[in-house]
Image (cartoon, rainbow, N blue to C red; front, side, top):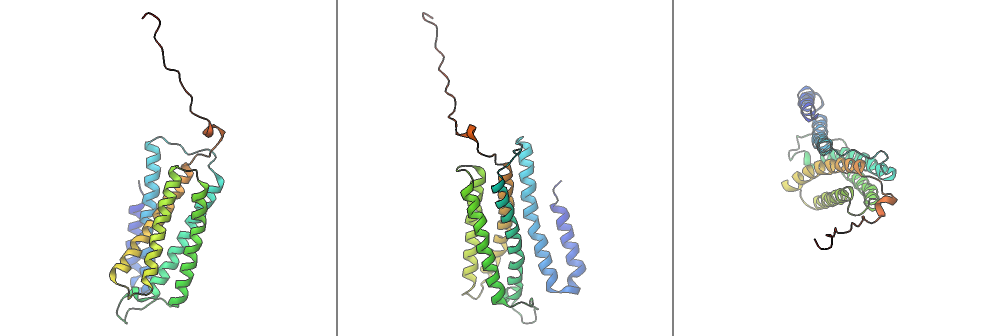
Length: 215
């Protein structure tokens, strides 16, 4: 059974119990809990798909690729947390001055968020280069980098604008796609079999059967 329903139950319980006590903190906690939903759903889907297709993971997956995928997972997790601080510190939290913001300097936390985002591109790019061409893990890493770049473009667009509603909705959706994409990349890397000498050998050629003479 997928853990997503349990996370959603805990998400709602957390919201109801803490909303009156911690104010904006419960909004951040709710968003973090909600971000786990696509991530856990992606991991569950990948595992069920592997079982349905009877695909067993390699006994010794490429260690460098696994390390880079784990670093990418950790980086996107930190990026998500800092991104919530950016959202809660700025006008995203609401138009009314009565809405209490997070007690962080908006410009400073935005710079930190951008630096972490740029840092996440390093393991992502190295992972893409380390994986063999045409492999599912490499394709999924490429899709992740494309989504990640689009999310960054939306963030850059937010800075000089007055934050139209679409500029607030898109990053929220994008953050879920980025987190789910990082999980999918990690799952695909674990399923990636290391390249070996046998992978470079040409496929065997079979002679075409011939009929007996006079048949």
